[in-house]
Image 1 (cartoon, one colour):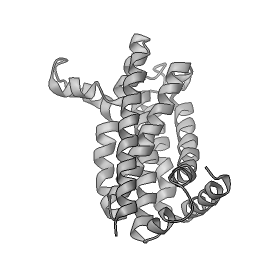
Image 2 (cartoon, rainbow, N blue to C red):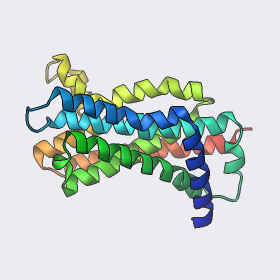
Image 3 (cartoon, rainbow, N blue to C red):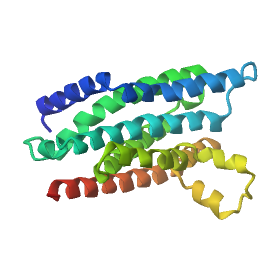
Image 4 (spheres, helix red, strand yellow):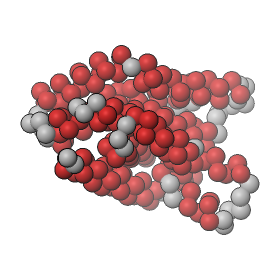
Amino acid sequence: MNVQRISAIFEKDMKDFTKNISMLMMPLISIVLALMYDRMGAGEGEMPLFIIYILVGVTFSAVTSMFMMNMMAEEKEKKTLRGLILSPASFVDIIVGKSLVTGVITLISLIISLLIIGIDPLLNIRAILGLVLMFLFFLMLGIGVGLFTTSIAAASAYAMPIMFLFGFTPMIELLGLAEDSIAIKIADVFPIMQAIKMHDTSSWLPLGIITMWVAAAALFMYVCFKKTRTDD
């Protein structure tokens, strides 16, 4: 890991971020949603846990994943990604450098959003570890999809499925499905639902399941990176 190369990638991506209107709007999605939830629940006490985690899921899917998808797809579309991959910068240098910008933007957006609707339920060691693991999952999923696609338009097509599958997962409980339905059983294994279950059961097992999702996303990202490196 080369600190100078990571710093150079970070500075370049931060400049690109400040010049890109669509990327500047991404962090506002969760903040606006938090304001809406706060207004809807005004005077009703503490916000329900599943609402808090919907906001977390939206932040990670709409900010973390979409940010990385667009960033990687843009470089790929402009033919600059291959040059970066073939440069002296290592795989770790590239991923860490690009992830730093996303991490800073995600952190700011998430903290502001949670301060609006209530951050107290997440101020414990298990919840914080869960947030870190979910950030890594959404980050690497976004990098993988960005490397897999060939253009920004193609990456955008994957944004909504990722948001609905992984960001809005708790919303499935509002569909009135039976608890033993296949859809509910599948959704219960997803990262956001496991984070909620961690609160309900006070168990560390959900963190293990989320870690498995992180490992799967890391493998997907690495495979896509290797394919991009060997493509003509």
